[in-house]
Amino acid sequence: MKVLLNGDSNMSGEELDDVSLSIGHQFCHLLGGEAVNLSYTGSSNDRIYDTTMAYITNNPVDFVLIGWSEMSRVQWFTNAEGQGKFYEINNLGVGKQPLPYEYQERYNHWKKFMADDWQFGKVMGWYWREKIYNLHCLMNYNKIPHLFFHAFHRFHVYDKQYQLNWHDRFIDPYENPNTLPTTYIHWSRNNGYQEITPGWFHYEPAAQRAWAELLVDHVNTHNLTTI
Image (cartoon, rainbow, N blue to C red; front, side, top):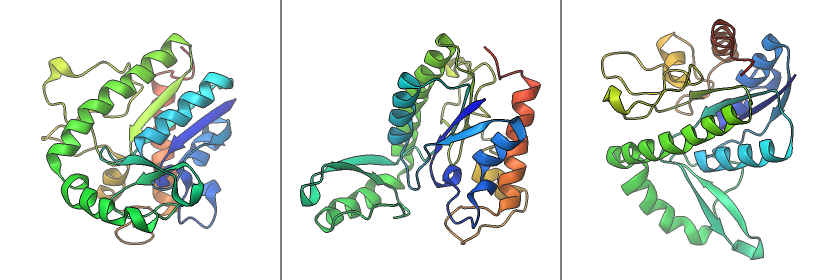
């Protein structure tokens, strides 16, 4: 059973001494699958979406697990030093590729006026709800079993008439002011788990194991390994 994993640092196993203790690898171990991990530290949802689409278009896969990142994260394409590539832009300033110096002023402006702006995050949440739902529908059409969860933020869609049906393939997708959020980092904090480095939102191996168990229980309860 080939399991495609994608997400940001929470799925890549950042700061763990042994990446086999990460959410994705623990999930695969419990489910009895072989991991193909496309996760990337500092990743935007753009990168997660694009790399997932590229992989499932060109490769067979038995299951897809994605932990979606912050809604406000973006990608910037640069030709710094003659090397055209995308950089992952996030408000923590973490990632595998440091942003070229000449883009620092643009980054400072983005971080101050966009990254932490609630309205921007809300609008991006609506945008990503539509785009991720398209991916969900495409996977259903192609009979690719999958499960999604939020690592950081849920979709800010409060009215139930506009909440799309994910057929149990998204853990707690929508913001609900009356309940605690079931996103990975909030769930870990609310259950008393500790960050490896305070402020970086990477939780101890015990949290990653427990979250993987929660995901597998959800898969088994709803028979999500088949479509």
